[in-house]
Image (cartoon, rainbow over all chains, first blue to last red; front, side, top):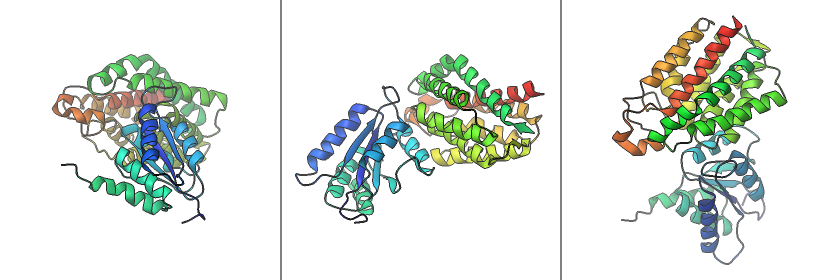
Length: 137
Length: 204
């Protein structure tokens, strides 16, 4: 691991505060009973409603940053674009923050399980992205 | 030369236009989007004005960088990071010069538009704001006379999105049902270019 035993932090960005919170709860619940990686939800628009709040994302990323990197999962459109726009500038998000290319729910579960098991940021990213490979029919 | 006051004037005029036309933008967005484009941009440009009033930046580049940051923070929809990136990248390309030539601005705006295309993964013809921004940036030949040409190019580009089928964003889920509606992002881009031309005319 890159920073001692510190876990990778996970941020879940959704258009909906309820979706972000619920997926965070689902991922925590499925991650097992051991030490849990820090997970923060950043859902909804500035001032409430559906949308994306850049300040909320930045605060969530700082909150879960333990020095081992922060993995961000985003749902759609503005959630993805806002994270990418923040990443394009230095100092907006903690060093070592990465947007994962992954499905939101399945990727979040894979990311939290992997981070909680001590995986580094590359391992967390790989696990989340692998969730795309699981076909349902 | 274009000074800091010119860029403050542009963004003030843009904010006024967005405020005035917010209802029309939301109406366009209700046809093929989620009916929040006007209200989102109005909130974003109100934040831009408040930030510029609170601490007026000293250079053209700093005006655009600050405005772009405000749009990313406060819009709440995809137009926030897209317009925020447009202004921020354009501002960064201008550097910290106290005045810039129209040619330098035209060059910087092309860099800003290219950054928008990269962020959104869109190209002209996808029925997005790029259908107005790309022809406008191309029409800016580097003289203040060409600001009017850029306004016309943006307006024509926005109008030309009507028969297109959307290939990006929420509207793309509608498939053929997106045909026949003007793209709201192209419409708001035309407002920004009209404000730019107005700022150039007010200055003359």
